[in-house]
Length: 510
Image 1 (cartoon, helix red, strand yellow):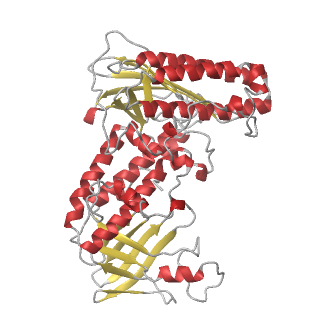
Image 2 (cartoon, helix red, strand yellow):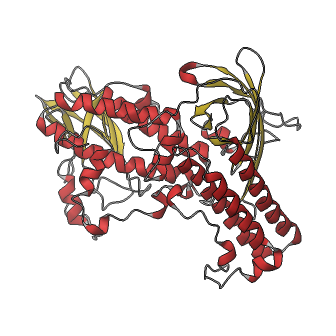
């Protein structure tokens, strides 16, 4: 709840406060940002032609191949299973079905266009498998422990107890989005009890047979229960999850996910099945990012920690800094809303946006949360002068000042909606008293100045950027953002103590 405009008790609700004053046209949320669980769960490819136009009843394509009956069976099985899912798991179960629908829709386009017998049969088999899987999942809700079979839209895993609380994990994922967009991965790992309720271990990849081939490397993996789901997280770097060199695994990029118990099992082992709650209601997630936070105990704990840090920090700040940080936090919450779906379907990286890059999306969301935690918990409001690291929702800069007053500053300002629109900060100069003077002779020189606890970079560039909007000449100034000359390099940043989550975040989080 927001008790007063300047001091919301929940960092997430700062976005709501901003939205109340936004114009009506700004209220609409892009479809890809919305929670998948809010979408229709009914498969539509049998009720639409390949160009997207509606047909009366099942399309000829579906009737002739019998897909309409298979689709109806999947819909019935899902509806029956959903009624048995616990209320806090239903959004995740619905998301899983929505992802299957996405995948099967893409595959159906290829089958209809190619009209090959093998592809037609593959599609039919995928629908039959999904109906059978949903029937098994309906019987699995309420199952305890870790042992047994688990499944989701992208594949399945089995866990077998070995000794002293350890488990052998065997996974097989097989997602086919049609054409050449498909992944198959068989994976084995051993996990043992670790910290914070997780079982942790490493994968045991198969090795390529070619003598000159680069060996496949083991990748850290962890798992634990999140309520009625099994949460598996693969801690791979980008090279590992996109190209594993394991002959049994095309890609590791879909191992991370929420898996549901497949069937009942007698004599189940014991484990903690609590559901780690974030600061919002997981029975009604609004966005795709909300769903992922609810799916993952670490992300939910990060959300709680962000809220605690936010509430602890605000009272000790002066009014000007508090106002600016509140505005920055509103922008950051918007960035978090965009983070997961944008990296789940990273078309901007020239990868097909049809596929679900679950490892990539989760890791980038975790990195963004942890960076913000580092700012709120490590807010250096006692800092004097310019030296140190400064961070905002859309910029970072590191300033050094030597004993003679020489200043060097390097950093970056980004636009999450325009990856080519950032600014590189490479600023040098010296201090005259407490005032920074740029060493470059420009019409619009770089500036660094303190404003209460904050650092303002290139304050005047906001004005210059507005003047050059739509112009091709540089009569008024020399643009600082070379990649996009019409944007401003101005930034208002906040002092933060050194942290690995800022200096070396896990992956390129933007």
